[in-house]
Image (cartoon, rainbow, N blue to C red; front, top):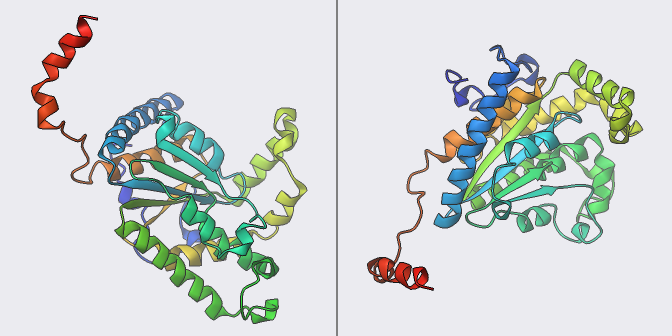
Length: 292
């Protein structure tokens, strides 16, 4: 992994998902993957402690991918060493009645990271140009002016949403939020195998839903809309990274590596200096406590 550059996963020009591999060419042993992940997440934890004290940047981690792509386990494994006060995970489900009374970005604004903290979005604002494109009748629940039926949803409507998302991300980036967007790139065959394992392992039966098969049947549509969303919204201040995810363990290592190497390149993140009056009296305060 030392010779794998993070830019090979970054989207900087138009991509075709079909032409991008879901398996990393480089072979690593289980021991190597475990060791590297441990190293990166420990380094991330130390850096986040410093970032928390610095309190100038927040970090937004956006995770998208087809069902079974490994979002939940990636969150658990990559961020497990971070201080609990420094990372908040948000899993965005079907909008609630309250959320539907606001615009589609409202609930995501509320979940943005405070300065010094990480927010992890397990599924993100991109669901509003993915799931709703595959199932456009969902938009009827949003009660949008001028959209009274599915027939009112034109290509221009989606282009406008892409523009709104780009503006949203540019705004938060300019105000101190470092944005990472990861698409966990899974092959259709690997998804089939993972769904089968859910059915064959009684401990994992609860994860399976018949709806998984209904969504799987729409694979090609999802791939088309993912590709378009990525191409429309990968920008230098809010880049997409396409992560080969047929191997969950290597996907976790790549994500941790990208976050750590990117964050450590940001200049000026350091613990604040003590006030001079406190610094001069450090020994005095130490002696007071030592004598108790």
